[in-house]
Length: 220
Image (cartoon, rainbow, N blue to C red; front, side, top):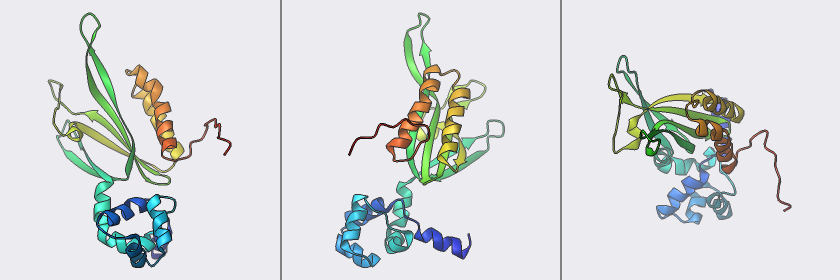
């Protein structure tokens, strides 16, 4: 990244402003002290705290120098993948708030067709990193060859092998999830049918624009 690009990045609204201010307040800072540290007004800090306004990385740098490591720790997850042929392991650290996570189940039934146990086989998670930056985490339950026995562990995140996919627009993200529903979830009829609804609902619930939505706005 060039010096000019770094300067532009520092002036962009910092998405995690509210979370950063909360860390400082929980650590005993007053809004007035934060304002002094960031060379702004207490009224601005109040807007940061309430989420009605975002600061820039440049404004918030004094707090980021102190709390940045804690903020990053609170907004990332660790994943891994296993190559079943070579047993090679790859570990991933994915930053950004998880805005969607859903498991897809194989339904085990007895000979009479009665449901015995719901077994999660696939999982889909989406991290939101910035306005138009997303990471899709495609997961499958780890199994042992040749018995095909499913891995079990008290740490739920440890039982999945993951594939990481980056997407640079909301529409690219939606297209990928729709494709996943249509192709990967062919044996999960209900999930394949409802996933397109669920991803659009999650995006709208997090304040992100979705094309093709018929809106009925309130009169206010």
